Image 1 (cartoon, rainbow, N blue to C red):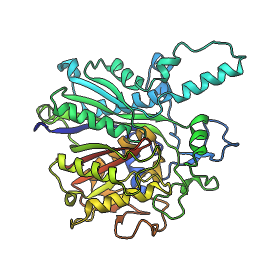
Image 2: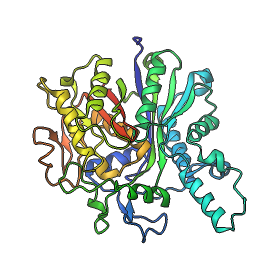
Image 3: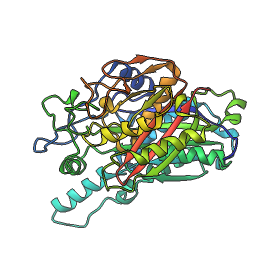
Amino acid sequence: MSDIRVVVTGMGAVTPLGNDVETFWNNAVKGVSGAGMITRFDASKFKTRFACEVKDFDPKQYLDRNEIKRSDLYTKYGLHAAGQAIEDSGFDFEKMNPFDVGVIWGSGQGGIETLEKEVQSFTQNGFEPKFNPFLIPKMLSNMAGGMISLKYGYMGINYSTVSACATSNTSIMDAYHYIKLGKGKIFVTGGSESGITEASIGGFSAMKALSTRNDDPATASRPYDPNRDGFVMGEGAGCLILEEYEHAKARGAKIYAEVRGASMTNDAYHMTATHPEGLGAYQAMKSALEEGGLTPSDVDYINTHSTSTPVGDISEPAAIRRLMEGYTNNASISGTKSMTGHLLGAAGVIEAILSIKAINHNIIPPTINTEVIDPEIGDDLDIVIKEAKEKEIKIAMSNTFGFGGHNGIAVFGEV
């Protein structure tokens, strides 16, 4: 890979903890839970009746009438997060070749809400074939990225990644590598998801993947705790502006962090379960560090995937323990899904934002709700629970793993 450096010059977020980066970050540091009873539909008959919903999101404040009409909710979230990040970056598109700006955006489920509502309408209206003409474009998982380019006129590389819950880290990785290959100067990258629907909640519930702690949703997501019983569904979007370093420096851009490395592997083990020894996760972390000329001793913080599922929360610590074996540094780790819920395809990018902010502020957001660490996980890892921790952070790693065996790792460093 070339010596071209890639930096982060803009960020945007729509999350259950806030609809901008600063609100999101401040609530994460405070240990705020985004969970509550589902308001999007009547969940009274479901085994799981709560989720981490985005609050106070009014698309009319951010999007024009046609964008609203033509977009599924996941695209609306994506457009707003991207708009924030583009404004934050301050780059002057008028001075650029439009083919030098690309968009790589991901979503695990795409427009599932649109598809679900159209099928419901079809069955409830005597199976009359009267479908919305925007059904197909609204449901496509590439449409958020397409709509971002359409809105702003970006004509560079544009496509969408799908690797389940590793999706947005895959997007970040691809954008990073394309810049290093000289295929673009700036990429708008990240992911969005709106999976709080009847079919999505019902489907994950049928798999027994969701927590059923309906009596106390705020404490339901408890990574690493022996009483964890499944993940909490989240929704939202996150966006990073990745930029070639010399280009950013020449225009005097604000630089949040440098992308030091990124890697993907596959467990090739099970359709939905992670490898019990974390072999794929270990190799992905190792390769991402090696790409950046780093060793495990350099890592100060790992934002773990830790979804609060009985099996998944065990394999990742095993992989981290293997990665750190023989090295003196004890990286601190935390699971922020305990606050945001699991944003599926958008999980990686919002956790990347928290990792970058951790570098900027030398604060590790906590794993809330976790009272004790499961003995099966062990007590030799520095897992930050209950309250945020102050620590000098120069290198942070963001881990994501997805159904299908996908492992996506992104490493960020101070500049």
